[in-house]
Amino acid sequence: MILPIYAFGQPVLKKVAKEVDYEDEDIKELISNMWDTMYNAEGIGLAAPQIGKSYRIFLVDTLQLDKESDETASGIKEVFINAQMLEEFNEEKEYEEGCLSIPDIRGNVTRHSTVKIKFIDAKGKEREETFSGINARVIQHEYDHIEGKLFTDQLKPLKKRRIARKLEKIKKGEIPLSYRMKFI
Ligand code: ZN
Image 1 (cartoon, helix red, strand yellow):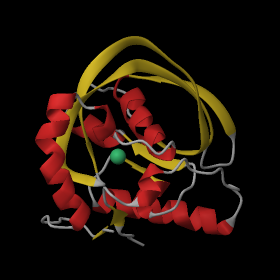
Image 2 (image 1 turned 180 degrees about the vertical axis):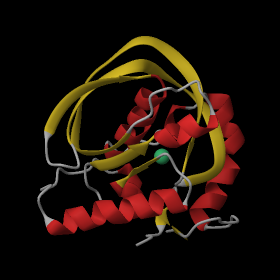
Image 3 (image 1 turned 120 degrees about the horizontal axis):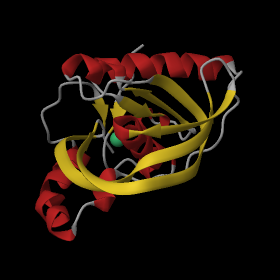
Image 4 (image 1 turned 90 degrees about the horizontal axis):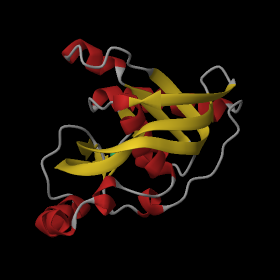
């Protein structure tokens, strides 16, 4: 089932999300709905706060990018439940990001190129893994969501000023939509 995506300005996007019971049937259904919602909006990542639930769950599918370029040879399709970032390391890189909750805004964010993260996967298995490249990039973006942070918070001051008016429009829902959203 496709759910509406909560837009910039929704308080849930600013909350630190809570851990969940991954064996709960409602959680399993929620994850399935999150996949539907993410693919419908043509995203490569989605976090539970973006569908209005303050839970520590996010999805990443960078396999979709493999089809577009041969640069990322090893995409992942993974659900991260109760994730805990253990380490962010290696050189910092700037890369242009976007977000399904903030349509039509893109901006450069500096992040580490490698992460070590602990999480429960779709099979209920606890894993500790290291990811790099685009996978690390998307994981950090989605992890920020469950920590109540948005990529726009990390943009340079000049860029922030440039997008301020557009953000206000998104908040009020005064934007054209290509998927269903929920505004305050
Ligand atoms: Zn996002």
